[in-house]
Length: 155
Image 1 (cartoon, rainbow, N blue to C red):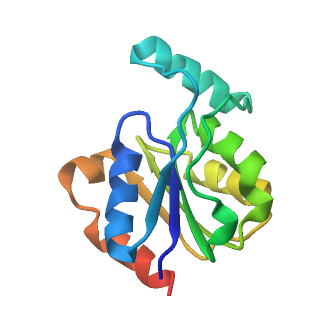
Image 2: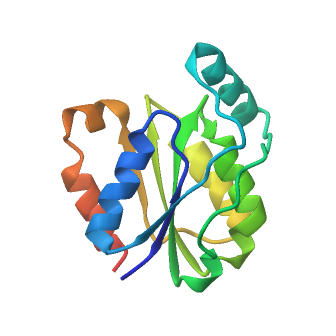
Image 3: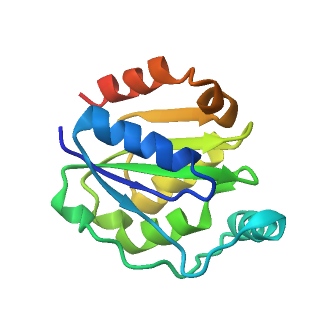
């Protein structure tokens, strides 16, 4: 399959899923990093504000050209029931050049539908599949079946 797996991760949950998907799909991984980190509670509140207000922070250049890949798996944490702002920036810059997409997200409790809806609008493509994992599922390591079903749905 060899997809490109693009993600942003503030706490490591989304990174973990991206790395597991790379192992399952033999994919290349590219992390979207904002210019300037946000840590702690103040950092989280800033991220939540950006997410809810549709901000697009400056992100560092990515290593891979997503247009070279037939399939791109896009991963985001859900912040304040919204798409993470670094992934929003990435999709505004690269979304229209993607051929086929699938989406995955990590979250505390809710907001995946909002995030996926915005992702679809930004890239103009319906995802082949979606995967939603909660932090609790990841901590309990009970996400293997869902991850395998997602990979299977990709073909």
